[in-house]
Length: 234
Image 1 (cartoon, helix red, strand yellow):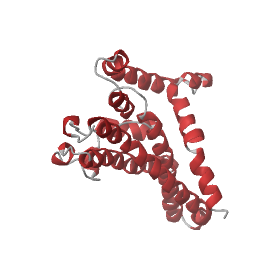
Image 2 (cartoon, one colour):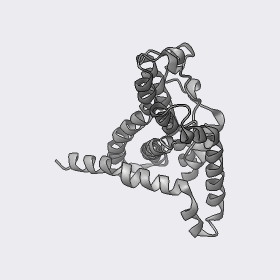
Image 3 (cartoon, helix red, strand yellow):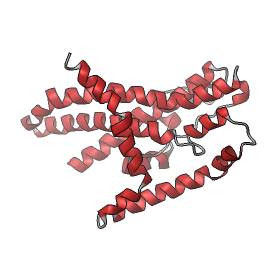
């Protein structure tokens, strides 16, 4: 039952991580003067508008993935540099807000609902499902924040680099040309290590995403847990 709960909770959590992320890109682009995403129906929270099937499955299985990129035409921005930068960071900012809101709800479920798991099988299933959904929303949102800020095309971090550099910049050109390939290699390496580290645990330390996950939860997540820890004790 725990495996079913984990898989179902992961799938639900992804909707609360990826869809607001993509909606934020579309909305901020529109506010900056570019209606492209709205014209294509992407300024919406409807999961069917945003989810990429392979990226969704990958996210559910290994904890990271992607949605369909929001179409943006930077030539429409009132201020091109400001428009590119704010549109690029909009998604990760929303993910950080979602993590901040999900964490106290997760604590509430642990404190007030989790003790009722023993009352019945049905209660145990739904309480554990809710607990897992909120936990995954928090964890996935933090990871999405860190992952998407990697300066590799086509991630948001590359768009941030793009907003501050000229097209002839050699670093920008390298990231644009090889960013996707680097990502594929890192994801494949992470997947292989996940399989092999069952037999050779030390291999996890060669997984870049292991460090990204640690950084997301322990560094980016620390202000959130500290803030709510203080708020709930006042």
